[in-house]
Length: 76
Image 1 (cartoon, rainbow, N blue to C red):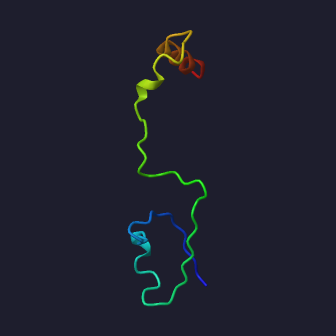
Image 2 (cartoon, rainbow, N blue to C red):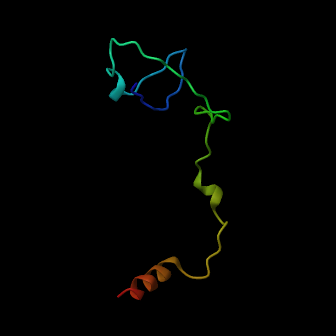
Image 3 (cartoon, one colour):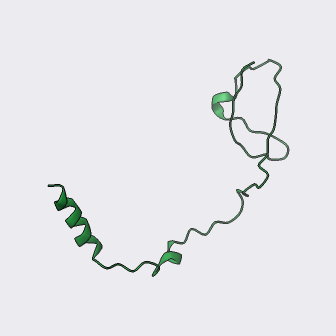
């Protein structure tokens, strides 16, 4: 028996196959086993991608550009 593995999201009771598998074993009898994560992460949940929430969290003791120059000079 051959097997394939992929992750997808159910929509209206339909499992969408990736394009690379859509004609795999076409016309043949197949067995489908569905596994669900016990603690699923909702793909529809809004994610906070505002980078400003990190502003002011790190205090630097040296100018970042000066630090970078120092590291580059270290290898020459």
